[in-house]
Amino acid sequence: MGKKFHFVCQDCDHEIDNFDEWFGNGQQCPSCGGKHIRTVYHTDKSRLAELVRGGQRLESMWHYFDFLPLNKAENIISDGEGVSPMRRWKFLEDYARDRYGKILEVYVNRNDYSPATGTFKDKGGSLAASVLKEHGIKSYVVASTGNTANAFAQYLAKAGISASVFVPQDSLRENFVHIGALGQKVYVVKGDYAYAKKLAADYAKKHNILISTGNLDPLRLEAKKTTAFEMKRQLGRMPDVYIQAISGGTSPLALEKAFDDFKDTGILGKMPRMIFIQGDRCDPQVQAWNKAKASGFPDGWENDYPVIENPITLVPTLATGNPVLYPLLAKLVKKTGGEYFSVKEEMAVDMARLVAYEVAVKIGPASAVGLLGFFEALKHNAIQDGEMVFINIGEGVRRAVTFVEEVSYTTEQITDLDDTERFDRKKYRSFVWKPFENY
Ligand SMILES: Cc1ncc(COP(=O)(O)O)c(C=O)c1O
Ligand SMILES: [Zn+2]
Image (cartoon, rainbow, N blue to C red; front, side, top):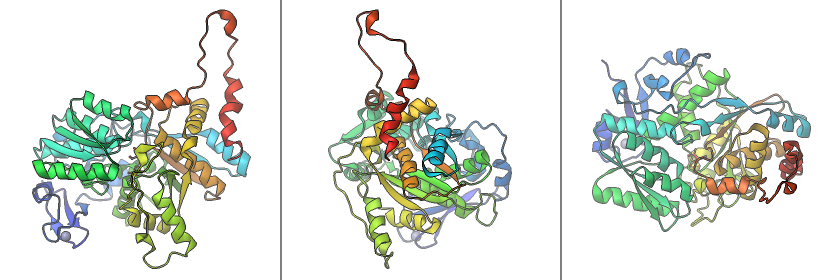
């Protein structure tokens, strides 16, 4: 069997043979010490056309095995990740039509369906566990605001690999107790996400354990790039607009990788306009973008961004105060003609109520931020009549019990029947739409 893939250092073009060399060298380029490598496949690219053909029923992202960096299928650790349905949400289309006179097709990626942990981080967890298993690695370290931590902890547990997880202290409690329940190790760090990342790196060094290298780690990027394949497979064509709540930026950079890999084949088509959303209490990327835009994108604009230390936010899952990948993300937004918007975190509960009322889907706070972004994008005329819009919501509410408690609004304590009245859910319609009347 020929070799399936190799890596190329993005700083010096040095070729790295395989994961053994990459891991053995401390996940740094042996030639220049660079940490950003690109996975290059030897598989015939035209094969993707067959894989993304519509009408197939897939079990997991491992349908795309030929374009994932694992050598032997027997090492796959999977739990049905990466094939979450993309559903058309008519109430969002009706809103765009009634309020702005725009006829849209709006699809939402239901990552809350992902069997393992109910987030789009399951893909990375599955690939990481599979590759680590293939290379006989028994211990791993990861820092995360919560969802990646959960996905990695769970898949690594399935592979019998020890996971040491570092989460910042403001992470949702329900998010990290699940990791502890699996018998993986959780360190709740007194400090922000940036500090949790630092302690995780120090711990990995001290104990000589491999650590997830962050948003550009091939174990995350290569898994998440399959979302581009799924868009093509499920929707038949690429949407015009892609909307997502952004934190570190793995998902969009992974999509960019997929489009770059297959650009000469024409299989995936044109990359959508990227619209990135941040919560208003931790939105360094939006601030940087607005500043650059206002000053006409002067030379080096992409390197000018603020760092928010110890952000205090209602959506800690998204709170990357030091967005080190902003230079790459902002260039991607510019290249695709996209935008950055900030939304009110206080409205996450309103958004979750509206969605639960209209489509009976319970979304988590980070997903609510992404969906608020759709309203914001419409308000700023960033979506045009006739376009197909794709909203990548990252999570359900499986571990956000406190959030659901806030979203819930119909509970009444009663003593006898006189306290009740015949229930008609229609009476709540104006209540759930009220916060959006003057959006
Ligand atoms: C639910 C959810 N949405 C969005 C994001 C942002 O992901 P990224 O910026 O890495 O693409 C995260 C990451 O923590 C998340 O958990
Ligand atoms: Zn190099």
